[in-house]
Image (cartoon, rainbow, N blue to C red; front, side):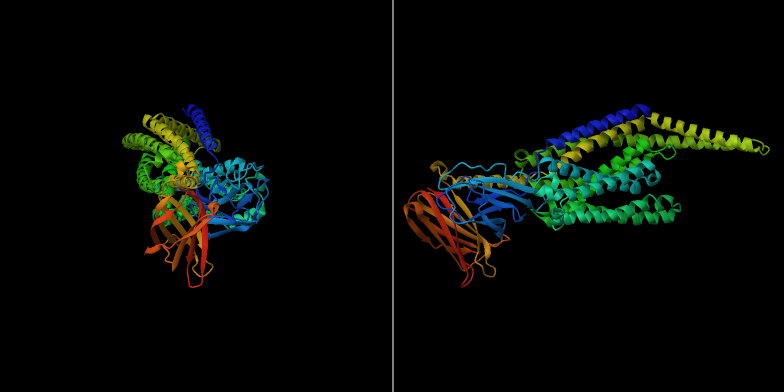
Length: 640
């Protein structure tokens, strides 16, 4: 039966690897987890005079270098001066050269989001009138191509290695302590450690190219590696390597001194010590993901990171333990088979892990989606539905395995009683035989050979009987099916971690839609509320912030205007004075001053703001933060 199962196992593994490869290959380049929510000048607009700077606003803070934000003229030459700066909040700006000629300009950006993923893109605006441009293929290098695919594979291998390492060790300590001496289980856990270590080193080397040029030739660039080590992701990967050194010591003790320990009290004490140390190391390894990815940014990071650690530990205990059980069922020697009690203990461990997964997964889903519509309207939500379906399928198969486990426990008691009866009969038979003379040397050798042959035959017979047990065979098949679904589930999870969260995607779509509406020159699209965000810096102490103008209904005649001033952290900012002025340069009209009334902290309003005619109005806001520190910022918008 073993000969027939082995080819089937190899075929199933190849099939699962093919499915996994298809999932990873079908994934688009790593999606942005920070989305571009606004820009000045806006995408596609035509401005009358050249702007002095270009600013981009993202949904979260991003990391930039000197070349992260570029502005190219119609001939493809750079017109920005200096490095990008952060005037406040999540807005980043770069100064432009003076006296820029008319034509279409390209803005290209390539940054790294706060949760470690590369964000790149490009758009155009025009000065005076649109023109042809020679610029092409900008803003798309990061996160894609061969390097992006290799990085995705590295992430998958790192997750798989952690699950096998942590889950396999947990299975031995909590469910099957005799497994510490089984060679196949030892190779599995050590293989998980090697896979995680190799993948971590590989990700560390790829990281610089993955977030910048996207060229495989830059993988071994030491300058890029030095820059990576100074980032949050680089620190997380280095921390993971240090923890893996502690994990190596844990494995050495588990499969060395622990396996050789025979005294029950000493083994119990060592079990407790290994359990505590193993949980600490496993939690640290899980935290190396939580501190640098989705959980570290966005809504409630202080809660999200511990929840993410619990989620990863539960996944490892369930799927890693499942892998160890599968290896034990197929590869454990006849003299140390995995017993039904161990399977029953793992069943309880898996049930507890599933409870933790449901609780933490529900919180993570709410945090990343924010609404029911995001399940169907975003890629993250769609992938999450696939993941939920796979988890449900896995739980269903696990329930079948639980049934086989119960039947195996029932037959195990009967088999143990039968074995005890046979041993008793053998002892009685041996006691009735007369003692013989001492055998000669040749006879002793022959007797030893016969004893070894009988032992081998007994072991083979026991293995055949064990494999012929329909309950054990059924458990093998159900656990193999569970492992197959788990492989695909891990691929979907890896893809999910590289996909923009649904909450962020919907917010970006809403911001883009609002921006497009407010910048449109079509009268049919220009009516309705107008919102403009303008970062400012008066240069003094506590002089940075963001001013937001809401104009409703943004048309000719009377309008309601609200002004909100915020600090860089988003909190309301009560400045001494705010003034607004409207200018229509094309008709030499204005500035028309408006002094709004203070309503509450960081909020001013004015009613009956008159807009005499439609056009591309410049809205200038003067913000004073002290007796001597003030600044005027402005934006153009189509009104009427």
